[in-house]
Structures are given as C-alpha cells and as structure tokens.
Image (tube, rainbow, N blue to C red; front, side, top):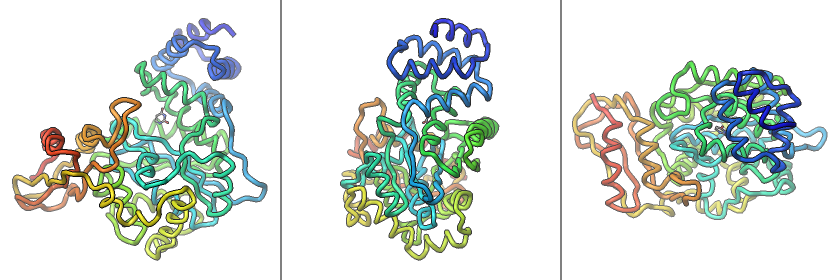
Length: 410
Ligand code: URA
C-alpha cells in the first residue's frame, strides 16, 4: 500500500476499493500512517464524499480494527438506540433499563458530550460511584444477570475510530457524512446487534440543521446497518428546543428518575416510547406500563448498583450536586413561549461548565437549567422561564444575555 496514492485517488474523486480502505485503516490503527497523511485523506473524503460501498467498507474496516462483542449461543436479541445528539437529550438513561424489562439484552456503548450536545457517560458519572469503564468480561456478566449495561468505548472497541475522531476534531473534518456514518455505525456494529433504532435529530440544537440533511444521514446509516444484517429503524426528531425541562448532567439524571418513577415531562416520555417500540417486542402500552409501575425504575437501580453507583443517591441527586447559585430568568412580558433556543441553551450550558470547551476540561455535574418552559406554554410577566444553576453569580450574569437572546414570549 502506498498511502500518498490513496490520498491522491480520493482527492481526485475516484472510488477506493474495499482492499484499499481496509489496508489504510489497518495500517493507521497499527500506527503506520502518519497523522498528517490520515488528516489529508479525511479532508479529501470531506470534499469528495464516499459512495455507499466505500462508506460500508470504511465502517466495517473500522469495526474490525478492534473487538466485536460475542454473546453466548441462544442469548436473547441484542438491541440498542443511537441518537445523533441534542440538548437535554437524556433518552438513553430511561430507554436502556426500559428495554431491558423485556426479554432482550441492551449492550449500550455511549459517548461523552460533543460540542453543545450532552453525553450519556457524563450524565451517568454524576451518580456517585458509577463506573462507565467496565471490562468486557464484567459487562457480559452484567448483561446475563440484568440484561443491560451502559459503558463507554473501551480501548479494544473501534480503536481506528478513536484515533480518526481525534484527528477529525482538530482538522475541520467532523461534518463529513461518510465519516460520521462510519464513526457511529462502526461502534454500534461492534456491539453485534440484532436491532438498532436511530434517533436522528435536526434543528438549531442538533448537528444536522435541516430535516433534509437528517434524512440523508439516516438513510446512509440505515443502508450500512442493513448491509451488515442489523434490523434498522429510524426516527427523525426536532431539536429546536431542549428535550424535557432540564439541561445539565445531574439535573438530567434527576429528571430521568422522575420519569422512571412514573412522572416527568410529556415530550420526553413520548420520544422514549416512540423509540422503544421500534426495537422492543413489547407493545407501546406494555412499555408505558413498565415506566408507570416501577419496573424500569427497579431495572435502573439494579444497573446503577451493578456498576458501582450509589443507588441511595438517585432520589437526591439534584440536592447532592446543588450549584451555589440558583437563579430564575424571569419573563419580561405575559404571553406564550414562542422560542426556547436549544442552541443558545446548549452553548450557555457549556459556558457554565456543564460541557467541555477543551478535550481535557472537567465537567461540572451541578450546573445547567431546570424548570424550562416549553414552546407553546403560557407565561405571566415576572414568572420564571427557567432556573439557572451556576457556580457563581458572575457565571450566571455572564450567560444571561445569551439565554435572553434565545427566548421569546409573544
Ligand atoms: N458521533 C460519533 O461518534 N462520531 C461522529 O463522527 C459524530 C458523532
């Protein structure tokens, strides 16, 4: 393999063969392709795109760069969900234990926050003691015992993606559809799933700004999944306002506890059930009953305990992490909430410390927003549109203009 020729071939818009892509990814994983060459290749892919065949070969090569989970013969169906990421998107925390109430296994490998979108692992780590880094043997034992684990990408799963993503992040090559599809699907395929549901978000607080872009991404991910024998389903969902009524790690876990105990906001419950029904063999009513009767809550507690978390902290998590400054943003006039901009709220959350501005930033679990009003709700002048949880009054004051610019009452 001659790496410069592969870069030139892609730069000139030609199609790479399965062998060429496979050799490139294998050599890159072994450390035999320089970062500058791989970055140049990624930029060529960014500009030239990839055919469906190339995208499939890239996905499978990245999947094969590491381990693919193996299950005992006769084990139940393996199911999972992937969201392309949103603000206040805490669906996984409820969905995984809910699905595990059925006779399926949920081997969920999740990520950390990316840009303004929150990450499941950061949220889980706000639970004292919760360990997202189980080794494969322990994860498998947990799956056999309670049917669900929620962990991060291990060193042996898709190492090629880990390396390539780090390069993309700093070379302007993240928003390439082929690279996104391969990155997401290689990790999901390494879970060796029977069924996968995709939640592809579009709108101000999402990676894909338009429905058309989200449709294209969904189509491409579905195509690759189906070619690999996974039963794929897909939902496109709007991300113009945050999901639910909280944004921020511990605050979001607290909201999930509410849902798992039979309460919680309507928009979130609807989306959770819409997604769950696509991969579960239970009916929508059956799934709703598991939320209402505490079955999913008990499964969540079991999972938290199995992964070293302090289950007794769950019902007091918001108080446990309470930020020093909790202040309302008040409506300046009466009317109906017309805008609650997910992008502005997501950016404000990162500025408060709830997300990362640099890769090695430590996430502040306590900060964020609660009691968010939803678009379409009535509000009186002087009533809170949200509560801001900040480390200090200065931090609150600093994000106030951004928050105000993202809210409208008519
Ligand atoms: N999430 C991923 O894991 N990879 C991408 O490329 C984009 C989102």
